[in-house]
Length: 482
Image 1 (cartoon, one colour):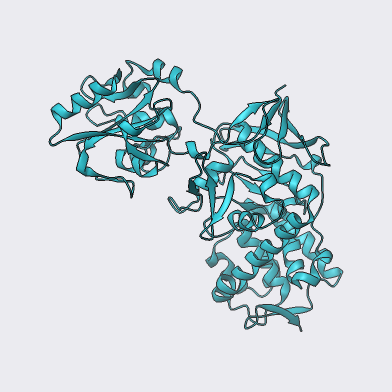
Image 2 (cartoon, rainbow, N blue to C red):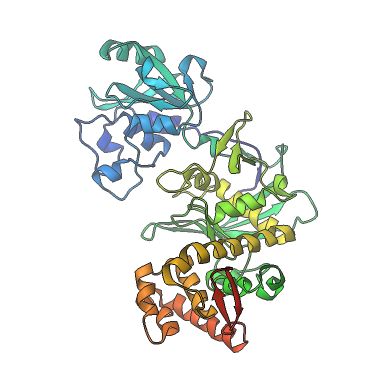
């Protein structure tokens, strides 16, 4: 059993044992993928495997493989560092990255390093720099002075050492044992029993223990994280009738998808798939820019209790930021490879490892959802806004939905929210005589269970006269009586 008190900001875990164990090894002993060419420069490749920098361009992109990848380009790593500067100005108590290149090859204010051959990278830890020396083709440990002098002798021009804090280190929270005082926000205890995690708030009026989720590790499906088993769902549910006054007929369209996604439970988490973090009755995922979970977090930050649950987050220039330990800001909405990787990594730092930070964030959201009606209202409001935006900006332009039955619109919205069919597949279904049945059968072999669940929900809604009596008015983006 593990019991923790969670708060504050954190630093990169101590990687010195791993660095020491790597000394003398060649790249084929370090990289689990297929980039082992000894004629290539592997300095960034080594650093990335040691520090978990898997963003593209990485070894799996370059040479293939299905294991944990590592980035292979020095200048790309430099651009991702939360903070950079001259090595002489670095805090030497921290484990960090060290770069050597021609001094005029770096623009510190913009965090840009020119992509020239003469650049090298290592990891500074406990007074030494660990790096991949390409001449002996192995990992070595040098003093900072030797690191600079060696490359000054072989590179042209005047070389300089630069530091960079490890990408992602500014997203980690400081997780301390029970008894450490909490600086900001509500502290939560976390306890693991077998594969299940439990939590409770350690202040306020609601301190009952609750289930956060169950661990799943399934490499064949690439599932690593937590979820709540269906037979253990609990908590407040979304009920369409409670929200018709606020969002009109959209409440019922949302209801169909909520039933299929989460059985309408408003506290449902998922941290095990490629999105890294999904939450709520509408299952909003963290990876999509300007959509889904990031929109919900923007709304959450406007609520009175936001500082109690996420004290390290703030809005700046209408974008979500992490407040760093020194008061600086990290933009969590910066887009890399068409994804919100920093936002994802703040919520769930390590894809294949289950750690306290992702458990904490789930616990925070579940507790907030359970005890704050404003939090639940934000979920509903944002979900409705997302659907309304997609109906008028995507689904109507794609399919010409003006005057179409609300049942057809509901099914189309669910298909695309779930992602089980392409636009062309939906268009073909709409050409059938029985369009409703055709839509409910798209990609049926792969998604039979989902299609059947939606069909059953649609049947119930039509029998109750909830669906089937309105049509879509594209000009006003609303549903009107037939």
